[in-house]
Structure formats: structure tokens, C-alpha cells
Length: 323
Image (tube, rainbow, N blue to C red; front, side, top):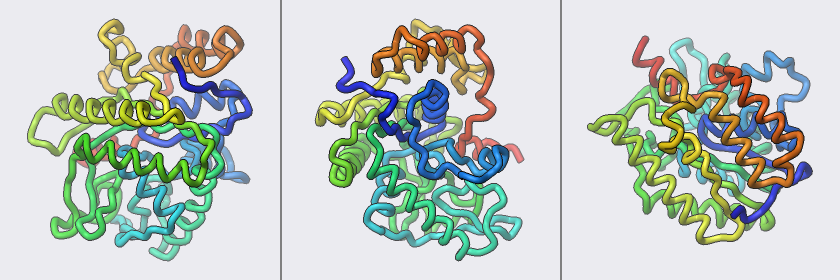
């Protein structure tokens, strides 16, 4: 049974992995108050799409791991700095190491990166401080991080900017203890700045595209999703302000027989997304039999394709290997 309900006036913020974007898109389309402080007002629709405005509540890109989320929170709310602040691309332009794909044109200098990040963090502070509902989709446990200060990157250095240096960078696969502790730390901090916020956790059903572990990617996927699911449950059990929505189970459960995945057996198709969101609306709102439910059923029957427009940093790994 859900611990709380959502209303159309609740400011609903989103963050997390690629699958979180489906939730963001559907909530806005269904008339809920999708809270987007960094919305790119004044830009053309094309420029907003290119700059990833509205993909999440702020332009932080994919936050695959709990550690990424918590380090963003500490930076935005407590001014915690990072050793690496800009990566240079092969074309000479610079990108933000912690959201390297949000500005396709890049920046002219490290100073421009810092200026853009400072503006971005102002919007992030609003997300954490003003959201009534914060939806976070846990995606991965594997990450690349700095040996110098422990900062976690969404992509390995060198994929979308910068360069990998074994003396400065290392691979890390977060354990259940690390993930539980980091999630608890984030939730405690969030409660301090926003005492009334309610948090809805989900686990992305999208399997890993690759693994750095010396084992098959299916084994690594099972490990990651198991850790994230247990961590989410522990957080729910510890607080009345935190709930879990089973999008992972809805999409990957054996009764579906894989029918909710695209032909690549990785991306979730529109039928699966519509089913998950119909269940979401039914569970967390009082509109399960109303216009929102009817709209979602219509989407499910039409099953229009939209996976290509989902922004997924992880796919840069596949592109870099193929090129």
C-alpha cells in the first residue's frame, strides 16, 4: 500500500537513470506539476531539446548511482568542491565532468564551464529545497571515480571528454553497504533542508549496456539491480517519507515474458512504460479511473515509439567502442 498520494498541485521533481525520463515525460503530459526550475525559458524547442532542458528537473544529466546523487546534493547545498572541474574534448572545447553531455556544443574555456555549473547549482538547490515529491530512479552500481577526492563521474574519463589516467581515476563497483549508507546520508540531508518532502524510489529495469567486471554483463546486471533494490527497500523500511514503486518488477517480471522490451532486449518499449505509469497513477493518485488512466491506456494500445528520444549517457560507452 502506498505511503502517500500525489496531487496535481504537488511539485514533483525527478532525477536518476535513463528510465526516470519516462516518468518525467508522462507526469507532465498527464497534467501533473512536473517541477523544472531549470527549464530553458526563452529558448526554442529545438535548443531546449539539444540542451537537455526538462529531461529532468534540472540539467544534471543521468545520475546513475546513489553516490552521484549525494555528491550533487552536498555540492549544491553545502558548497562541497571537486578537484576536477573541466574536461577538454578532442575538438578543443570543454565539458563539465559531472554532466558531460548536457551541452553538445561544449564550452570555450574551463571558466565558462565553472560559470555554467554555478548557475546550474542554483537551480539544483531549488529542486532539493522546494520539491514536494522527489522521484529518484536508481540505475547502476558500477562507476568511475577520482582517486584524488572520490568524486564519481557518469562516464569514464575519455568517453565524452577528458582522458583516463590510471594514477587519477579508478573503477569502483559499489557494495550494498556503501549504497545503503550513501542513500541514508542523502535522505537525512534532504530532510534537513526540506522536512516535508516525500521521496519515491524506483529501480531502473534497463540492464547494463556493458560491464568493467571480468564476468558476463548479465551477471553484473543482476548484481547491480539486486544491490539497488535492497538499498531502496532498506530506505523505505527506515522512513515514512520514503516509498518504493515497483517499475523494475512490472517491466522485468516473468509474467511479461520480455514483451515490454524493444528488439534490443534492453530499452523499455512504450507498452511497458504505459503499463508502469498506469500502475503508478492508480497507486499514487486518486485518478486511476479518470482522464489520466484513459490517456495512459490509449498510449498503451497505440504503443508509439519514443525510445530514441531518451537521453542515456551510458550509450556513449557503446558509441566509443564502436567508433
